Length: 188
Image (cartoon, rainbow, N blue to C red):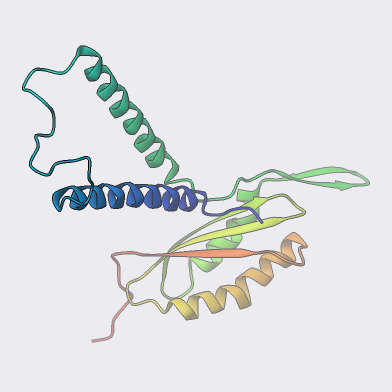
């Protein structure tokens, strides 16, 4: 199955590495403070003397900052990538070939689920290949929307119709719920 949340692995890895570096730094600082690291004197100055460091040190610091900045930028760029890659589906028939864009295939599905009670807006992406399709749904739900009822209705009504329209036996689906600022109609 296609990985639907590719940035999650990168996020976890970066957070673990950052946590380990901070933990090691904290252990080092506490160990130095209490004199548990023998070669270091807790009362000694951090750097000997008051002279400016050599010129190459500034280049190393600037290079390190540039690398950290580029890694942070790469991390930010990876965040919005949340949907699977889509490919045009091709159906071979005796009379010719039919091409179906995945966005066209899911338009009626998203239009239908957008009308469900508690749903403010819907977006779906049909990804993967015809042999291993994947459906990623992002719903903007109203603040007082019943998420369980929405999910149940999608899996019992909307998804079976989409599978039937695409002539698929199985269609794995993920749903991401987001809350909109709008609330549903209220009776006073």
